[in-house]
Every structure is written in structure tokens, then in C-alpha cells.
Image (cartoon, rainbow, N blue to C red; front, side, top):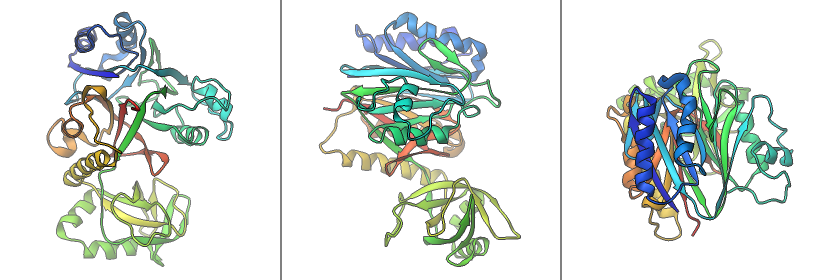
Length: 401
């Protein structure tokens, strides 16, 4: 297995594409890639639809997957706010790749496994081998991503699903999704990997717990009405009064709620929570509205986010990932990495460019990296696939042996 990445910033799509393709060709040498991921600025407008044809012209046998993006990542670079293209090309060996497009409104029922297999371009027989991984690029306006993820989890329990929502547009039809040499303006595109491949995921939510875990003692829909038997807002105010000045400042700017996994545990720590946004606070009722559907009896803990906690989180998770492998792993050019990172990260969060890309490069021995800044990040936490925000979801693609 061999991977190469490239990135080029230019206002002219033809120029940027030529530079990216030339860099991929130099890195691959005489080899032809089986797969090319590509991410590109919306500033190219309708011209972006031609990118698949340009890549296919140089790499005729490659499967191609990509989308428009508010910022792109390639190698150690992150380009935000400027027209650019990034790409990741892989020579996969004994790996099957199937690409697909899911039109809006054509999602099967969650328990219809044969239809789900057909939906993502596989043989509908339920006893056929499941893919090792599914990589998804949905359109945020026209794809019911949560239903899509729930269906894929139900139909492919052993598969890893990872990806990101296309970005760079503000209305339906403004994003471009690319499969092979065909552009789409809606639904979701993706691909499956089956065979001699492992796709590991690292999901860096970038938040730090504050205060103590609490029980949700009354909830309904997206509302949390009481915590530890007290109305939610007064409980939050009591917590706020006990915070350090530093955490109080963070909470005023970026306050989130973590919903605990594994109900009934005696102790919870950082990483034991699915972090969700607090959408609204009702001063009259004291209820909190969150971007989830918490249940009475769940454990939760308030969370804060800033550059320091986000940086600490992604660094520690990559170190933990390396230690979790059964034997010392060598990454480098045998490894391809896809980075799906939030539009709210990058230079706006860290104050400097290239932060997450450089952390991944340093932590994984300079693998080939490409990715983009997303409208939502898709990644697995504790065996279930979720759509996240303010997160970096990292897919590490490597040989299985």
C-alpha cells in the first residue's frame, strides 16, 4: 500500500489541478492509484465539476471521491479562505473500492439490510462480506445525515463509517459532490473499502469537562428540565459560581454539554461523553435545549472548549491511538490519513494555521494527509457513528498486516 498527498492554492482551477496532479504523479512514480480523494474551494464555481475529468485523464483506473470545501488540507498544510485543491491518492493492493451516490429521499428503512447494501453500491445479498469502511461526504442541505448514519450502523455493524459534510455554500445546490468524473449537487456520495485494509478513527471533540457529572432527572425531546433534582438553569448557575476565573471565561464563550456513555458507571472522566451543543436556555422554565435527545436518568457533564483544550485533546488522542495498537506501528507513506475538521477550528481557533495537520503529521510519522473543513464531522465514538461539531474526525487508512 502506498499513499501520496498534494495541495495547491490558485485562483485558476486548471492551474491548481495541474499542480496537484503533477505532485501526485511524482510521488507515485510508475504506479497507478486505485483511489483519489479530492477537496476543492467553492470559489471555482461550476468549473469544479470538471475536476473529476482532469484527474481521470491522468489516472484512468482510479475511483474518485471528493467535495467542495470552505478550506482544504493537504500534507502539513491547511488552506482557509483562499481557492485551493487538495488530494490524496492511494495504491491499495488487494482492496476493493465501490463508489456511490445516494439521492435525497431514497434512504431505506434501517432494518432493510439488502436495500442498504444496494444503496451504497454493493451486492444486495445479506451474506456478502461487509465493507471494512464506509467514507461519506453528504450535502448538509439535502441529505438526512442522521438517518443515513443510523441505517448504515444497523446494516453494517462491523464497518467503520467516517467522513464530513460538504461546505463552502449557504444554500441547497451550492455544494459540489464528486464521484469518479460525475458531479452532483445533492444527496450524499461515498465509497466502501473491502479487503486487506484497516481504517482506524480518532475523534477529537476538543472539550474539557467542568464541574461534576450530574443526573438528568427530567428530560423530554431536546430539553433538559432538571439536573440532580434541580431546575437545569439554577443548577448551571450554581456550577458557574464554583468555576475558576479561567473556566468561567471559557464557559461564557463556548459552553457545551457532554452526555455520558455507559450509564451506571461509578466514575466518569474526559472522553466518556458525547459532546453536544447547547442551543437555547429558557430563563422562564429553566430548561436547556441541546442538539441531542437526552433521556431521564442519563449522566451529563458541562464542557468548555478553547484552543488549549482542543490542542491537548488531539495530541493525547493520537498518542493513545498509537499505544492502543497491538504492536509498534510504522505509518509514513504506507498510511493515508483523511482529516475531517470543523469550520470552527483552524486558524480561527488556534490563532495559527496548519495546527491539526501538523499534529497528525508529527504523531504518525508524516503520512500522506488530505481533508477539508466541514459543516459537520462524522466519526465513531464507543461503537456508534455520530455527526459532530467543532471536532476533528481522523481516518487512518493502512494495510491490515
